[in-house]
Length: 590
Ligand SMILES: Cc1ncc(C[n+]2csc(CCOP(=O)(O)OP(=O)(O)O)c2C)c(N)n1
Image (cartoon, rainbow, N blue to C red; front, side):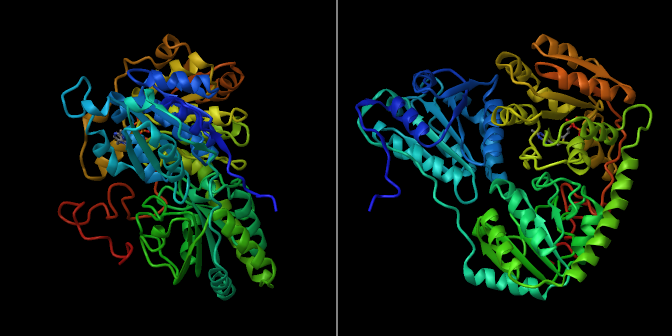
């Protein structure tokens, strides 16, 4: 019988280590390398380009790493890698860590000095890079011999792309790039993701059969598994309403889908929080029950919970589920849909619940429409986001940065269809939005991609506009320019502190900066100008920046009363020092 899965030996010829890396990356499905030229990287860049691989630099290592992160998030696998000179590698370390926190497939290589120079005060001695990055990674290896290269690259990509995805780092001693090797490169085929066991499916079916008011909670893991269609198929078969987690699960379906009940969390929708708190069963898929999604662990849990995750360590990490299922989100949802189809539901009961759910959702959307009503000057952010939702085509990717504007975005932006990477990184490091948007646009050129940015955070990454100009990557940048670090101001005010350091200079001209970097743009201050500006941005052949003068006093307005959703799980005035008080009564796991 013919072998159905022949191992493809790509190469075994005598060539340089750099060439062996390029061969292995190509044979493993890596399409593009984001990097920064310098030092020893040139040897490798030369081979990457010769091999036909796409190589793209950014203005900083940090931005190149975010671009790779965004690219991989869209493809849901390590479809790109990063390459930096050793002295720049730590500049990308926030992204390495974000990939660990967010479960994002990410692979970074740095070219270090010859290992013989380690710890000898060589120029740019980076002998400690391995130990510095080790705690941030899922996989890290220092490679000193060209013979080890194909295996190290293979292991790094496997670790980055399987199980709960995460960051891999290869610290490459320079000599291994130039040394000659004839070691073998094999094609990398990622293993199939795990399915739920028959026993687990049986138990899940029993729990669902007993339940009268189940709710499906869908998180970023469903996006990462490519499970959006499976989610809808299961929800439709079982007549179960879907709530999304507050950031990572956004955009799994249209907000208008009749089974979509809203967004969980303090910055979510009250109708979704109420529904989840009244449920008698949670079927939670691909969510880590983070602070944002659970209103700092203050949502009331039902007695019965099913938690499905590809990572066993997530099951019971925050609380003990009735049933934990280790499985890929898409596969488990498909399996569950099949089982549901084969049993009779109490359809009348389910329909009645859905009618109530839709009425509550309509009330919330009405409230949200009021938040976003045109409210004079300065421009209210909710209004701006609503206008973006109306102007942008379905499936547009709008990447928030970190701060108040992002909380508002993920709450009120209207998703009109399945949208991958609906949110930016959950780690929410300032200055990620623009490079994430650039990476996403490269991975999904057919989609409209917007970087929705706070003015404070834009100081980090605005220089990457020059990359958009240089490579002709079209993204729309909308600056929510409220003249302050709103998130900080709001947080400090809760503690009774007025902090002048949150104010930002009014002397900066972002439109002039954009122009200087090769990107057209305009500033608007009147809400009546939003539509036309967005139309100009959409019609522009290249990237376009809109600097919007917004209201520094917009309140985020929580959907769960009495909880400080950031920094703590405490009530605002609880305890003498306010943050070192015991957990709020009812906050999990108490
Ligand atoms: C690298 C980094 N440093 C600090 C923070 C803490 N932080 C979160 S939001 C924020 C303010 C952001 O201000 P701006 O970009 O203007 O957005 P706004 O909150 O006004 O919408 C800060 C400092 C962070 N998230 N990342």
